[in-house]
Amino acid sequence: MFLNAENMLGGYGETTILNGCSISVEKGEIAVIVGPNGAGKSTAMRAIFGMLNLQAGKVIFDNQDITSLKPQERVGKGMGFVPQTNNVFTSMTVLENMEIGGFINKDNFEENVQEVFKLFPILKEKEKQLVGELSGGQRQQVAVGRALMTNPKLLMLDEPTAGVSPIVVKELFEKIIEISKAGIAILMVEQNAKQALKIADHGFVLVQGENRYTDKGSNLLANKEVRKAFLGG
Amino acid sequence: MDYLNALALITNYILLPGLTYGSQLALGALGVTLIYAVLRFSNFAHGEIMSFGTMVCILFTWLGQSYGINFGFLPTALLFLPIAILFSVIYCILLERIVFYYYRTKKSDPIVFLIASIGVMFFTAGLIRFIIGPSDQSFNDGVRFLFTVRDFKNFTGLNEGFGLKTTQAITVITTIALCFLLFWFLNKTRTGKSMRAFSDNEDLALLSGIDPNKVVLLTWVIAGGLATFAGVLYGLDKVYKPFIFLQMLLPIFSAAIVGGVGNPLGAFVGGYIIALSELFVTFAYKKVLGYILPEGLGPDSMMQFLSTDYKFAVSFIILVIVLIIRPTGIFSGKTL
Image (cartoon, rainbow over all chains, first blue to last red; front, side, top):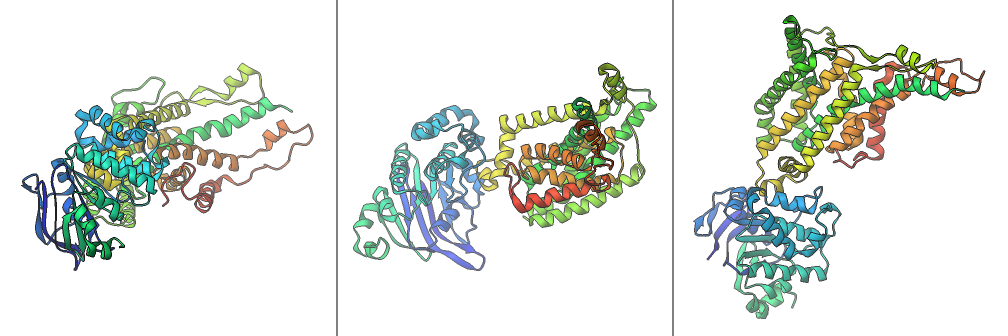
């Protein structure tokens, strides 16, 4: 496995939120973490990215144990992270956001920014505009674009479709499939569980910080119990 | 009715001094606003850092003068400004390392930083009084006027006129050049953009690989440099008073907040707004009205809204009004 987070145990303060959950993704695949509110979906992702200290378990990425690395160091190793909120520089232009995104990777800047603009043509049109003035869907594109500027091998998205319109959700998912086809591993936390599982190669259903179901996305969608308990029938 | 004479009077007593004082405030407010934008606290020690830089500049000017160095018709102090900037930048870096770094790694609340900066303010004020003493120092040895009121009157034949002090010209030109440079740096260079990114969204900037220590140090360097410019230009224009810098904090903070704290353009504009309002409100309009109004209607009283003793109240009132009506300031900075 390209990314393998095993038996993660951790939380904030005394209470543990992750109770031994495991997440794994292969290159060129899309993995989706779903589950009810408070199941520890976002926490699991933060733990994989190093924003949460684990009490037990380890994170193997690209055949290296990165459990003790800081988030910045993980970015250097090839992880890209799009937080759920505050994921863009609102007071800067689209192009400047890309520049900061590619801060540690300035040699390939032109190449990377063209790639991002090819993926999100609307950003090319608005490259001189302040990101704070863009719509929610466009901001998400900026956020994903910024993360892609570091040439990540694994892209992690924390609820990328939160608060954007259904049409934009569809469009964003299409873009995410396109990104994964370029050979980038994708790990997503999603509220739109049904739609997300449709495009997912693997799905992880978390409940109370533990893996309840782990299977192919299509199998999970077909699973009656999963449908009833987590996908609203 | 004589508008030209009135205009000359207003230029001499309001516009020129206002633009000069405004420039000095703008430079001070830029430092405050940069520190606020990047380190997220109101640096009360900024006035004393201005004072510290000016003191170093005066000491070196005296040293230079004792060796017979001068700068022609310009003040000798300008020659030693780079050395003064170097010293205050080093002082700022020491402050950062010894005082603020500790709170930064502890992720203390902004209020803790603010209180620490008040401590730094008292310490620096004490240090300055140890070194140069508490008394006023006049260190402007250049030609005082580029042209005097008398020159102007002779040239134009008007009753009233305005003179242009050398220091006024130097202050305004230097300020505009520095601001231009600063805005170019922040908007066009990689390092400047990384500073803006850090100020906008610290976590995301860290994720993008921006080194926070570098950004913070650079901010102190710029703030220290600007503070020295502001202090020296103020000292040249008026006189160096170690005690004035505590009082100057109020108009400087007002300028930063009126423009929108954390926004450099706001600090720049805010400086002029505060300075000009102070002068507009405390100026005695008797003579001006005498020229503008029809013969015989000229007022007998001074026609002064507020005594000059109250000039600091003006910035205070503006500050309160802005905080009530538009807390983010004119250019929408961050709310305090």
